[in-house]
Image (cartoon, rainbow, N blue to C red; front, side, top):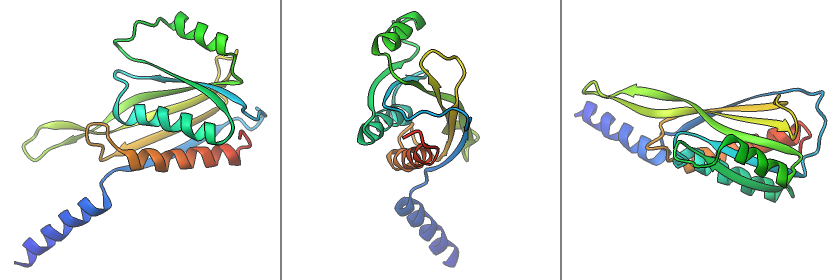
Length: 172
């Protein structure tokens, strides 16, 4: 009886607390000094949906709240935009920085019956100056417990950390 109660208690805790975690790590070049006033955000992925779409939308909203003008675009495997098309969009917008958001890999888990499923992912955010190929600021987000890429709370917590770090690094 006690084992059954513990199992039910564990299930309730997971439902109430949520299972999605997100860890954020940062790296930057402190020699690059810029107060970002405009940004072009390019979300790249196999499919632009779920966590990565919410991350791009949330980044756009957060930058706007920091008085940064920004434009957001996304490309995936079905996109008809070529890299040259995206580069033209960036040059026409002429932002201070280009921010790329890209899913770098999947976190896989094995189910009770031996089936494998995606349980999270690793996302890279890189910021570079307009006419540079080298990023001067990066953030890596590793999620666990994603269900079909849906994780609104994890997106918001990650974005809060990212914006605060950008403020701490004197980018905003």
